[in-house]
Image (tube, rainbow, N blue to C red; front, side):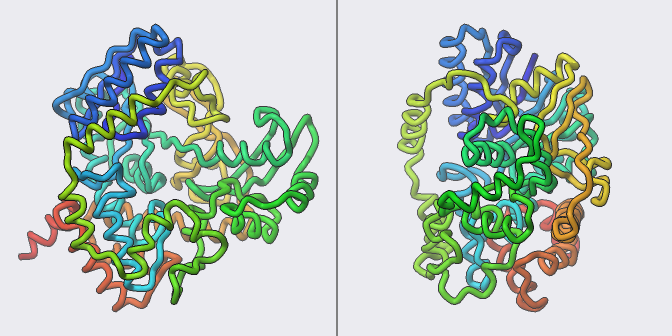
Length: 464
């Protein structure tokens, strides 16, 4: 097979590349990396060759000069692109444009811990990334029309929906590890092997509820809830644990930093160093404390990034990659994303169950068919098909319908460059502020993203 890895210089690709080397069915495949930072892609390729030698996988790694070269004749396209542009930062989350978006939002009273799934910062990430992903779709449609596109980037549901709605490709599948982490967390609390748990969950990327939990043929949700009350809650799971007790359905993704994006609990904070729950100790929160307390500025963020010594940055990246060792075995669909197994199951037309972000298509009866949900799905040679999960409980249905509407409006705004749609999305969001303030915020966000918003900038240029 030929696998194209786009954004292939990113640290994320350590996991799938290791997976490819460990999966016997992928031995002998060609892995083509493409990134606007070719030097980083070369370092990932070097690491991949080391992994391949260790396992005897015979994988052929090369770095493409162009997008066309990367996708031409490929079987699968794996993307992980944050749309932050060339930067000295380690990745999208530390890029000056993303940190700048969060700084601007904080000045308007909207605190965002992660900012990759909801809120204005996630919206701006979508505005940067969707045009890139649609360009990828056009290249795939022209040069590898049978290829399956796998996306790992955030905002996951938004990017997948954009490619499905506006990109002419055979199949788009979003892959994440949030549900797997949740199942592993439940297994740890119960002290049972995770593969023995029977779970049904409903939700969109980074927010899901377990609606059924069984073990060895028995309903163990009551036992699980009792066990949760007995054990000390992980501080980083405090919010999710408390909400799960209220809903009487367990929130799958255990980390509060992502879940809080679906709630208004950060609105109007007068002291950003006093976040609710234990979020001040969160890794993402520590990164942005300077943004919130006013000690950091947009210009300082840009200057710091521009002052990065590229040769030293590449040396540090190479050193980091050289220390990474292969895991003992490839990921399964429970222990991780299982990218290699997903690819080989589709390639072989083999029926197997995976955790994927795909259109609902009736799997959750009371949510829109086109909504991108994170579900169990069965593979075949055309991609995956979602497995029926029942209906969303009323409280979850209400929350998800609002989030799904936000996702759809953000997609349409990104494709059309319609500023009014962007403002509509901001009013739907949990971090909404009054229209005039939102308009001012949006202008500042657009200025911070200058040169990275082709659809909006093109439309603005036409008006002039």
